[in-house]
Length: 410
Image (cartoon, rainbow, N blue to C red; front, top):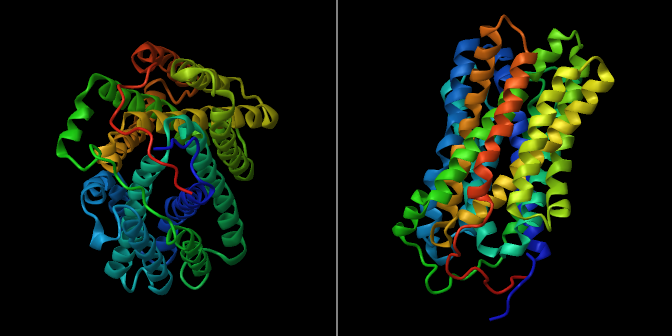
């Protein structure tokens, strides 16, 4: 058996295209779909409920992992056929959103939105499983850095592009459906790339086994789950409240949009920097850098005095989050069991989604001290530093799983 050193270019391009597509679709659904429904005549409360119900699907996507891990669909494979089905389902859902009027066909519109997000969950989960299948340990940082860069850049670019598009055409039925057709059409790129891929053949000892789920109860996995939730709560708690903070500093909405785009650019830079600067640091060094930079850039928000300083700290804060997110994905790959690769990795990602709770905690803290943001930034900074107590437990990879080095796939 020969040992491969790197993931082949076709595989990496396919994975990057899938991650970029996620960024495109999430940029629309999170930022604009609710407003599209409201402008179409749907009550704001109803639109909000539909949005919440649809996006909650993302929290439960880990339930799709066992399907991919266990079932070789019609003999076509454990990953590729599910990815193809997910891409097609998302495209059909997005096309349905473009064709249906949200007020006149509310139930059908909600069903199409669900189909789009369910398709995203399916191809995302199964793509992550394939990434783990084909990526050797020494190439994890490069692969995850590339994938995170693809997603962050796509999200940043499309958030800006869609915003300018709708500034010109308006948002709502009869005005901005073209964006939905663009999102659906872009799904053809990863579809064309994925179809020719050859799946990794599982080695003896790597076959699906429910007993692999027990690894999630190991101390290393439990600490990693806690770390993922806690660092994410700090990062997203700050991220989600920066707009209100900027408004309190009297920045206009145009400037605020620029700062948001800069944070996405910073995320891409941080994810790219991880495999370059972190190659010889080891997990311990990379964790310390990530948590320390999160603490410093969170505290740095308190020093904003004008557009220049806001630009500086927005980019650095984004870099810190990009580094930490890519690093967490690398650590989750190390801790995932190849017998249930999609399932175990998806559980790590699902728990990290609990970080959205950081938004509510941050808001409550701000209101509790009289609508003052700066003390809460300092508190969040200290909490990020305190997470360094988890570094010794996460500083070394968990014990090796069977068959860590499959043959290279070109």
